[in-house]
Image 1 (cartoon, one colour):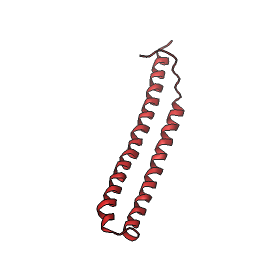
Image 2 (image 1 turned 30 degrees about the horizontal axis):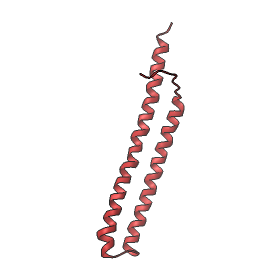
Image 3 (image 1 turned 60 degrees about the vertical axis):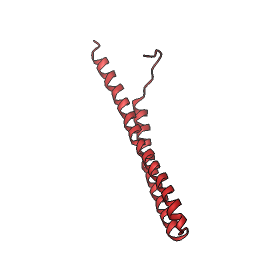
Length: 99
C-alpha cells in the first residue's frame, strides 16, 4: 500500500456521485431528443436510399455506443458511493475499537 496522507470526504464523494447520476439522466434525455431529431430528419429531410443504407446504420451504431457509455456512469456513481461508505464503516470500526 502506498504511504502518505489520505484525505477522504464521504459527503463530497456522495455529492459527486449524485451529480454524476444527474448528468447521466440529462445525457440520456439529450440522446433521446437527438435520436428523435435524426429519425425525423431521415423521414422528412434526408429521405434517400443512401440515408437508409448508410446514415441510419451509422447513427444507430453511434447511438448504441453512446447509450452504453452513458449507462457506464451509473457504475461509476455506485462505485464512488461504495468507496465513501466503506471508508466511513472502516473509520467507525476503528474508532469503536479504541478505548
